[in-house]
Image (cartoon, rainbow, N blue to C red):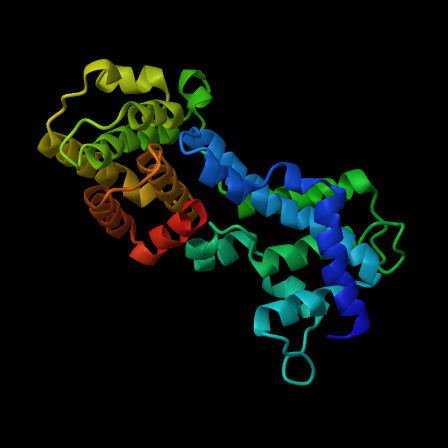
Amino acid sequence: MEFEELCFIIGHEFGHAFFEHHHLPAYGITQGLRGLQPSKLLRLMSWSRQSEISADRAGMLCANTLEDSIHALMKLSTGGLGEPVISFDVNEFQNQVADIDDFIDQNYALMHTTHPLNPFRVRAIIEFSKLTDFKQTKAGLKIDEVNLNIDKIIKRMNPSELNADQTQDSSITTKERQIKVFMVFAGYWVLSADGSAGSKDELLSLEDICGKELVDSIKPMGGLSMDRNSAHKDMVQALDELLPELTKPEKSNILESLVTIARADGEVSEPERNCLDEIAKLLGFERTFIDGILKFLE
């Protein structure tokens, strides 16, 4: 790498230290707190990806140019390949990722990782470079404007999480409720796969993600004895009605949530994993998507 590119990389790591990201070590927390609520775990994984965006800002300040920062990210993704093997045009890149929704649809299976995908990181530092202070672009934006633009990118990078609070919110949409109903049946079907109604932590995790009120309206967690065959039938029926309306990011978020629910007791048993694989297939995912989530969690 060129000197300025190394400055970006080293600056990025110093950025983690400067922002004190080590006080919230996502991977270490997932290992040490086996009973961490799934909703908090999902937010932690999202925060982990967002912290990389913050560190990239520090890296760009050290590299001092947008081009060197982007080249460093590209080389990190290609094992060090740069010009003339790999060239990069900022304007052309912006044209290619102008439609973030289309990009997400094509790469949804790669969204749930500890680090955001490089196109998001590059797009974020391009927006950051539009600050008036840099004088490298004609945009001349204020920091609040830059942050707003990057917030929109981050929102697309992290599909909206299923928060339990929404269940009691009168503003919850019909689609959001349908998703939660499907997840109640799917969650119970997964948790009871190993011959029990699920551990206390797992059942609480289902309430945490879907909302206690909704779960109780279907089947009180205090005495779950729902027949597995009935749960599977209801799960498939709920999905049949919902599937045509689901976006790929919503599907990936549902599956990530179900994995964290199953893992609430510290492990995903083989029967639970088999159920998750079947749900993944129903949603149009390969089992490798679940592998990616578990790799981060385990």
